[in-house]
Image 1 (cartoon, rainbow, N blue to C red):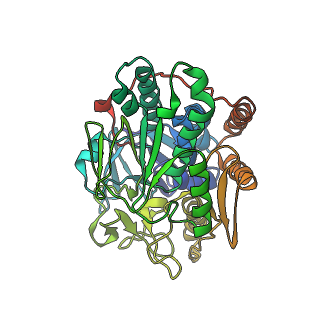
Image 2: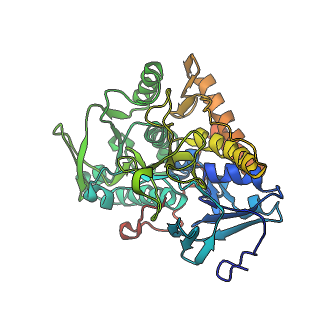
Image 3: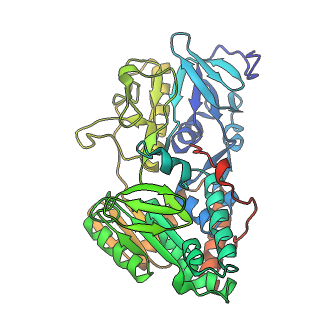
Length: 435
């Protein structure tokens, strides 16, 4: 018996999975009912977060319970599977030992699925002052901050302060930034004027700042063009070829001389891997904070240590800089690695991973979305419908699917957002970059 983590001793090979994101959940679901291994899943939270819908928590469309799923409900299906809520501090590969905040545990095979965290590119001032949106607590803090600023704006007699409180600046025009801007714009158009009839929402501005020459840089030019048209129709102001250099005391400064006063400043300009202490050297690509892996997802230099998802950098002919840091590679790598671990156990050869790109998409509000699927490029209502269907399919848990669908139908019919609640008042000094 592992006295600290209370994990039974076993004669079966022990697979320890670090991280309950898309990759960790994917491999755990594949192995949970197998009798070949003992499976231990570690995560600092006791739930899986469906990150593509975090922006809807921030913009009051969904409650956090709709996009979170208990990790114990995944592992409870197997007799040899265990979950422990703990933060991994270090891995000692020579002793095959994982050191956590609740003790240590030995492993036979280690799967690192720690995902990614917000990348501030070394700007400590922005990191200290900006909001980010990589976790449920961060999404709730952003929601509270936006609603608190609105409550303050409605009572202040100072016009300059009111405009500052009603200014929203989003840095980064990838899917997260675009979807968040669209969600806030929908609030401004359909919801907030009814909540605050005594406030002039022509003073409310939504800005997206992007260093590239178009929004949605990872997607096709057609998708960028359609998304730009949709955002402008919603009244969102775009600042392309512009880099933010600082944000302090509500002042946004850029390399082009543009300055904005905004009480809500969201950083969605990039992500970086979340590596673990103890595994570094040639396996860690420092510029990306990702582990270099081979075609079997083995971390370079190790036979029994694997990495999947955002933390894994697998360079191929088609993906010289690694696979995109989105959900699909993590899900597919998790399923594939489960099969390879079974192959190792059965004395068979592993098969190389091949990524199947199912396309990319982004929504920009009611009836507005863009989709790139193979050679197909389209936008508008049909793209929006596909976006909703795909997200419902991949949302973990039947209950979550039903609740989310109900909320979407309710919001669509009533032009309403039901979750405009300040449950936990925002405090800047408490905000942390939760992975």
